[in-house]
Amino acid sequence: MTPEDPRRDADDDLREALQRAVADVEPSYRLDRIRTRTRSDPRSGSPEEGPMKKNARTWLVGATGAVIATAAVIVTLAVVGGGDDDTAPTAGDPTSSASPSERPSETASSAPRPTPPASSAPEPGPSQGAETGDGGGVEVVVPVYYTVDTPQGARLVREFRRVGAAGDSAEDRATAALDAAVGLAPADPDYTTGWPSDASVEVVRRSDDWLVTVASAETDLRAVPDGTDPGTAETMRQQLVYTLQAVLQERPPIELVASDGGEGGPLLGGTSGPVEAADELDALALMNITNPVEGQVVRGDTLRADGRSSGFEATVVWEVRAGGADGEVVEEGSATAEGWMDALYPWSFEVDVADLEPGDYTLVVRNDDPTGGTEGIGDSADTKAFTLE
Image: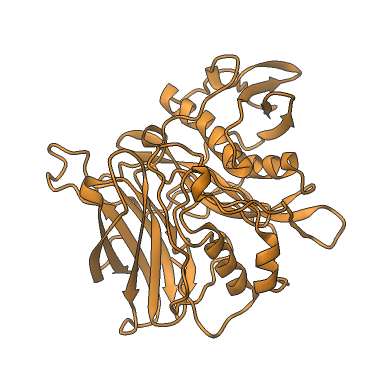
């Protein structure tokens, strides 16, 4: 969701620009248009790094899904897979406004693939990043996939992260995004990254494919680590594939290799050669909230929410709860996604929050399972905490 308000600051402008650029299509690089609508952000900086533990806020009834296919690119950001919203908010920069704004039309890809059809992608523009000003590279916003535990096992979810990159080449942006995937704690405490704390990534574009090497001095990543089941290991490999293809906005062949003291081999017990992106219904959570972002500050009378899902008859059920995900329901309703069954599809709705007291709230959005899980897969849910001012 992207609430908006007249009391804007540079962060507000950046978020709005990002959102408009990605609207449920797989965007490409549109910096020129963004620069005409935004001003420099004096407070920008790389997100805080380090491990993050999951908090007590959990997925509602059977958060059985697997999130968002792929989506947007902007300011050196590209996202693959049927973008899920008209906003590409940056986790770690959670301030936004909350009045209605003009939204571009949304389109859904009927194919469950992490690459959008050419007809739905915006016209490509130059790939550029904002210079950090210290001569040490650029700051970019990139799509990053993380993992989440669901009743179906580990699945992928996506956040947009603001990170530093060595430069503005495709390799630099890809390396920055993959470094975040393995080493930057997710903003949403429900999400995780299962890589060793010392893991690092090297990305090389070869003549016919891309080579991604993950190194760790503490863990032999050629094998599935102790305590990690094979299904989770496969999700971790897909995490790298989805993130790289999202940044590139292409589906090139990708080889994943582990490096251990100079020795190389297939990553996490995988096979040699290119790794294909899994079908999104097998790899991603079936419900994902893109807006609001975790910890977002909402100003104004309207909370705008959007995301992607695949659920029974495209029904999307939502609640606003006071405090955490187990708090009192203060607003509730339903919406309809643009499709279901064969892929994840965009959904969006607005909540009138004018009568709510300022404070902390949690948005809960789930797919409806009328059987209560007895015949279907149960409710797939996602939650985002936000603060209403």
